[in-house]
Length: 273
Image 1 (cartoon, rainbow, N blue to C red):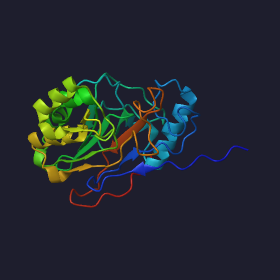
Image 2: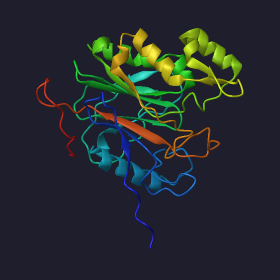
Image 3: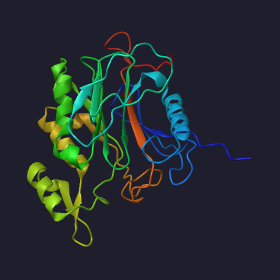
Image 4: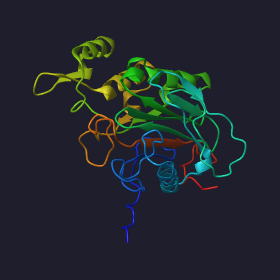
């Protein structure tokens, strides 16, 4: 008899008040090299495994599978509004467009982005009851996709100064060695603090520092941005595209537009429907 799968493990932010989660790789049914909770359909894993893992994530996160919106990520800076759904039959929905960020003001929508070293950025705008999810690799970070997300929410009435955000697990400066050319580009764009030198003197890039700088320049106070400290490349329990030579699974960070009745209330659990 095969052992029962481990429970799904979710990391959460202390700042975000809406339902959300950054999954680790524990749980799920995928075999090696995707072992655990692989949530990426373009990895070579069997579609049935990925679907089972997505349903396990939804159960652990307490959200309806049919309300999950995703996009086909292309390492750009496009942020789009999630479309209105025509009912909810519980079926998993395919990516609805090419983009790297999405937002919604619609009660009950769940937004997700897939990562395996890139930054998953989750944002809430409590003043307009909106949420956003952003995939920010080095290309998206260089293009300041985080600012595009702030602009998208601001276009719907959100005040940048009221936003709260969390940078989820990603490859951190300890492990993200880059070329001198890329290091120079980021240092020129975001300041020298985003680059550090490893023991061998080679440049390492701190993507989260660049994202935090982008958010602050866009009007989000630094105190309202949390950075989770796990590094996907050297912290056990995560998929890492770089560490695993490209043959690995994907995480799916999610955030739900689930608010209490009164705007000043305390959010309760996301109710399955």
